[in-house]
Image 1 (cartoon, protein in one colour):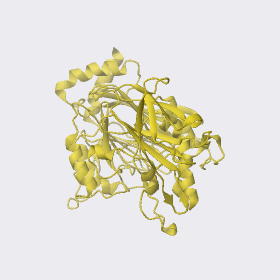
Image 2 (cartoon, protein in one colour; image 1 turned 90 degrees about the vertical axis):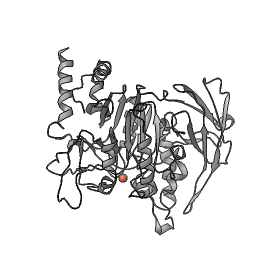
Image 3 (cartoon, helix red, strand yellow; image 1 turned 45 degrees about the vertical axis):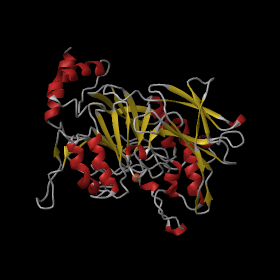
Image 4 (tube, rainbow, N blue to C red; image 1 turned 135 degrees about the horizontal axis):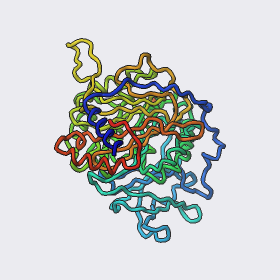
Length: 477
Ligand SMILES: [Fe+2]
């Protein structure tokens, strides 16, 4: 009881101040070499059998979570476009028919890329599915989310800047241990753009096989980073995002977007908005117009959790990529506060950082210098570009630590956000620590809509009891 009283007191205090000075972690890990795993390693093994499906991945296929897009590649011939699926492994009595295409990138020719939309799924249901032909067919499963409901729980994993090194593998393995249901991916997938000519396509293929143990079983919500741009005039490839867009479909039409690079989905109690840091976003551009409309559609009574994904962080105190998110901050930050976004995840910087609830929306070019100030309506900003790619860690944080920065550490890892109900979610950043997963930055996230409404304090208190009954967390944001 004493613990709960103390916790509730802290909760009230945390609503009026942004807390103590930030922490710069002094943890230094013995880093594995930041090199890509050799192609002959078993993590890139091609599945056995003629024309066996490989690089299998799924993503949400509609606005509300009753559809899935299954993608896979065959290399010998196009083969079947069908997905056979059902409620038990023995009875795959339903079928969906997809499409197949391939493409060239300089002198690389892709395999046959299959994409199949499965619609009309039941909520909260485990489905088994099979793709491929005869002896080479392969089986997987996925779980659909609960119906859209303000108290529907959901456990998200958040990964960024993954690449295909031994550190990347550690991140994937740790994420599997945390039991996530959906991955929110904040850009920079394969780092294939670090290669040249034919090898670019080869490393997109190897990455697809590398992540398959996760991507075939839970939807990854994709956003694009700078490593997806792949502007290569030296080999005549100048159309941005070509490899990414050919391979990783998104359900952008379902949210009335005009581009696969920005869109939104609703899952259980969350409304997730995906933005593109490397597409036009200033006033009157398609992305700006779309986001202007999308924010108006968010119904916090049904989906209380409002989450935004982007690649370049808006608040970042690392020397790496410092201020690169400033142009998007100027355009969108006032909306993030007006619509009370709960949390914004970004990548790009190869380190971990979390902000207090702060904003700098009072600044304009006429009123002189200004600094971020505590703002109860502002989101928490999290940079989790620490998936473990070949470029290594961003080890130089700016000194002193700015007031807006709550916690920062230059290690690899991933985050989890476990939504408990409409008012509370449990957040962890999990450091990769020499093969072990160590939850390092942990707190309770209060919902910005239901958590701040004074008339609903009683509800919040009741939810807090059920959400925290077995968790000794003392930090509430
Ligand atoms: Fe990046």
